[in-house]
Length: 354
Length: 267
Image 1 (cartoon, rainbow over the protein chains, first blue to last red):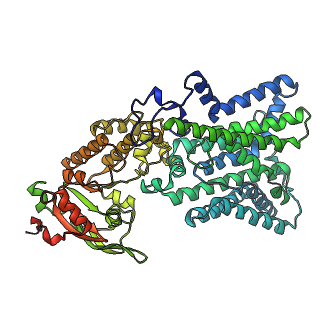
Image 2: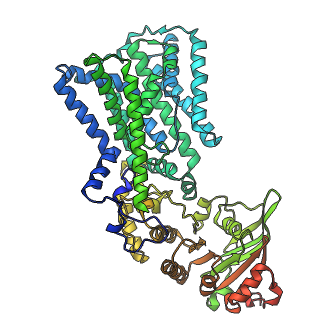
Image 3: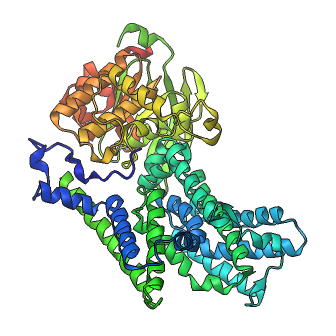
């Protein structure tokens, strides 16, 4: 498909009339090896894997514990829950939206599982109901944003506050312990070899999100809406429906993540939502992964690599015995670098185009 | 325009089309006819209502009053998709393409062909089939665009993007192509190419409505010209009876339609 290929290596003119002699002369100043190098470094789809790989190699040689099966599994396990939500948050951002509600959906989904199990429902039914609850909150977001034509940032910020407060009200601010062993096993059982259910579900989520974006009509429409919603509408894309569905899918995935979180921790606590560190990680993974906040451009693979980079950083800090207080500092710095790189790349592309 | 086209039931007969935006009257009781296989130009000053009129025919604007008949049967065009289902395609002034998607994807946007296999049920698109068909379509239409896939249309030149928009309309249109200011952003050579394409469409028996302010283009191209002023149709005449001077007088209101012979269509 057509989506993430940067335009900076295409010396095409976007002006109404092409400049005479367009071709080599129309390249940005400093054409040649230098600009080729710069193009590569500035492309997030190249820069990110390189940075991740370098860090991986550094830690492999600098730390005796890093490159062990156990530790690598720990890294994937640690990012599994946010990863499930991040895969589908990517779709939301590509469609030109933003979703601040996944973490609060984790909590609501956990609470629904708790009640369903307490009411004697079998584990599979409890899981389905909990995931559906996530989908319902997503539907509420989607309808307000797509049908109500409201700003997605404000709508999902509102949902976030609303359900965080509701979670505190419903639990009296206490952590609720889930007794059902069958349910808790989901959080601890290995499914394939040494891969836990959680890790497999995360990888499956990325595979599904990739499939949706790359192979289906829905995915094409998501890109089209993110690129130019009005053009998409005039072309016959059902913009309202697709936009709504994007948030429903994101809600469902957050519901799945919420089940995993509740099962692995064996409890549901409303204050998990107020921390919001997970939300930062989800959005950071998407943006560091090269998905443009203005929509229309991005990849699920990028988000996965961004997520692994964040996981490796956090793991490396622990292994190297650096205070965990440094983690948000590093994540924040990475986020800023990613955004600056994207902006530099965009401007360079514009310059070449002119 | 041959004799046959004048005696057939018109492709589109619109009666009493009106559109108000608050107190502003964009179109007031406009009757318009589009015959089979003709190029009809709609001209008028800025704000004369020509764009609103075209949009009511393309489904982008819903009229407050009036009715539209196609081949004698009443139709409702509540959105561009319904218009397209009737064989009406529109080339918008801003081209209305997804800038981040490639040529092939844009040509099929909103009409993607689904895979024949079981993936169809999941909404999997038949990308290979669409790509193969796009190349064939463009060759047939004699439109040459490099890089049909893999390159977003935003990195094509203005003329190339115009070609993509035209190609999209031609691939799907079976009855009518509406062109909104198709040459406004183009150079001389590219404009000439677009005008030639409009003639080719007509010669295939598909009607063309062209909205333009560039009067030499209009006079060269159109079989018939409708002049709009202050939301009303003030003239509806055969292009042969007009020259640029008369046309300007009609547009600015120095000449009334009464001064121009009523075309023979009513006879």
